[in-house]
Image (cartoon, rainbow, N blue to C red; front, top):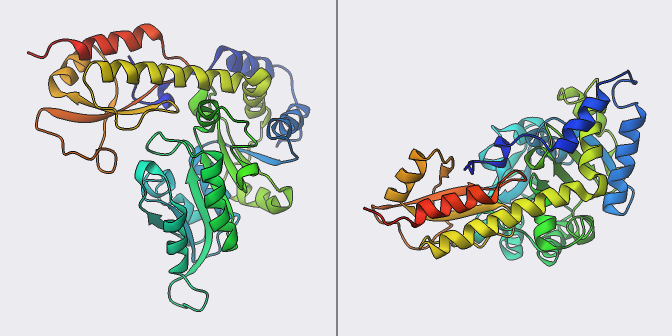
Amino acid sequence: MIFASDNWMGASDRVAAALVEAAAGHAPAYGNDPLTAAVEASFSRVFEREVATFFVATGTAANALSLAQFAKPGGVVFCHRDAHIAVDECGAPEFFGGGSRLHRIDGAGGKLLPADLAAAIAAYPAEALHHGQPAAVSISQLTEAGTAYTPAEIAEIAAVAHGAGLPLHMDGARFGNAVAGLGVSPAEASWRSGVDVLSFGGSKNGCFAAEAVVFFDPGKARGFEFHRKRAGQLFSKSRFVSAQFAAYLDGDHWLDMAAHANAMAQRLADGLVAAGSAVPLRPLGNEIFATLSKAADGRLRAAGASYYEWPPAGLIAAPLDNDTIFVRLVTSFRTDEADVERFVQIVSAVDA
């Protein structure tokens, strides 16, 4: 009953086998091997257009370097108040952006609203010398609340960003879960809706450590290779990341794994609601936020379940009573139906 994070899971058998196969023999270094070239072409097929793709080790590196490509020193990047770049990345976006800063915006369900974004951007007029200048807009997909932006919602955000002359970045650490949950194509969930650069995550969804920065206009990627090198993110044996992505993308394996994780999340959410828990945001991806009685929490911990207690602010309207906690549960490509059923059964047991 491991629901702490999809980061806790291992790698898919197909990805593992591809990595073992790549370990044999030799190949040119620094991404100049045939496998890396083939995978870069695969990204263009997945997104139905020519893209420029760069591998990095972590989601933090992908986000920080994506934004650094556009953020002027002293520039302002607009994001949700709970965005990973604002809460969980130790100042990396500001550091690699040469002293850029983040402007955090409130929004229900982890989402930015176009009107709120427009108002935030307007607070930095070109003639205001002391405030800094807008540099980029960043959204998360899935959001930190487990919700997903629809293509129409992305397009509305993109219209505001582009109207102000700003690029739109998407933190796609769980992009696969969003695409599978929305039932749209990767292209519709990204560049066709106005996204300029995507942090494409694989590590949470079946890879060992594979993340990519995808520019939908290759011309806007000019010079990015130097940012990546200076950040220590250019792999000498790039083919080992390529091998992971080759298996990950082949036959839509990445979407199959994401769809399984999503289905397990929906099953878990349904079971919790039936057991009396409040699930304020129905999962479209693989994250669930729910209430648990402290008695149920004790039974679950004693049975070995892993998950995180979570601050309820912004996610649930009514205050919690003294006998209730709020938690985050994350399913993965490896989540088993039996673990979901066991978790729900323990929650359903009559509290003493």
